Length: 352
Image 1 (cartoon, rainbow, N blue to C red):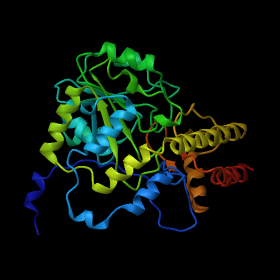
Image 2 (image 1 turned 135 degrees about the vertical axis):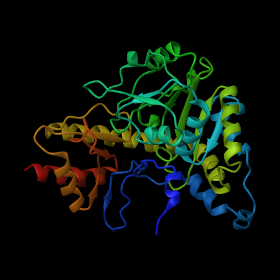
Image 3 (image 1 turned 120 degrees about the vertical axis):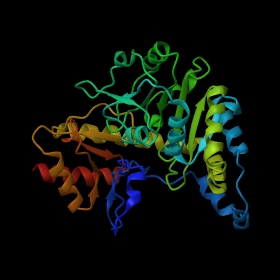
């Protein structure tokens, strides 16, 4: 049977997420999930949710959550946008802010959804190479463009930049929107939120999937000037006026009210990360400085793909990328101390 309609279909190369194995008793260090449960107030709020309320549409403006977020970040409510995870917020941001005939700029090694969105929304883009140490060179972004986006810390490298770096990019690009994607900022980085009221061309995007242990929900946040957020809301309301469900709104508010727990789990992960890096370096691994809840590792005499397959066979899942320049690296999510001990013991035995 001929499929005459095929030439009318939009075809793109989709984003490929980390493997979600269904096998029991595995160690899952491949999707950057938080190894600790959500905050106690989140669990308590979940138990108190009235199921009959699910028959109703959620608040389309998520007003209570937006006001809580504004108070938390020291902004006005008109400077806060929420969506179904940061990927939803990113997609809407691409549609809203990147509509120039000049190319969007982002690193060549970065979050792999960026080129997917660029292709999906017909946005011209240039991938800017990282330097030999897998670090963004800010001067490469001091050129004519239609917008800039980069993660801080970057993914999958984990390398972060400081606020002076971000300010230099902002001041050299006042005529375009610069998005700083802060999915992993809470693991040792310095947030650019404090720059928002100084630069109206800055938009900061965060997620509650990582540091707040809410990957099972979808809660993403964009923060920026009132005008930028207004345009973002216009696009959202032209696409889906109910982006964030009732349960997600309630539990995100509860998480914000349990800040001490949130900070405590981040501190634990940072400590475990640094201990893991120390042990791996003693085994000869080379690791860029990470400010994320994962590390990016390579070894001069071990093939990353071989180690990846050996780990997987033993029930330890990490992330391998076959892309040029990073095809001898593994990205390893930081788990609990006991989980990382299992990972390290396997690696030591593998090397021996």
